[in-house]
Length: 111
Image (cartoon, rainbow, N blue to C red; front, side):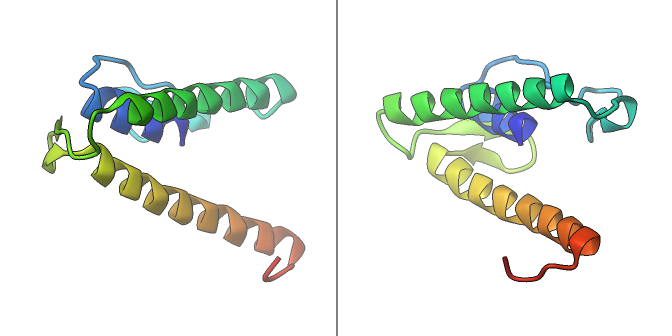
């Protein structure tokens, strides 16, 4: 989600030329196959996510309007309003994936 926030807020809405955190041209879907879980890696991922959420919050707070336009190669013009709604969809989707994985591990449903 840190990469998604970076993509939408920094690159698309703010127009920054910023590289991905966990993805790149060689691996556009992320380089998750080349990492091993561990406390340091988890903390670094949380820090990256917090930084991108902080950037997004500041960007939205400072924006003169949620209707200002940024650019997306697939969708054309996009606004912070569009990006905020899109990020809600992204979080819902990925949290749903995580919930399905957790249910497969512990069998708990609806918690």
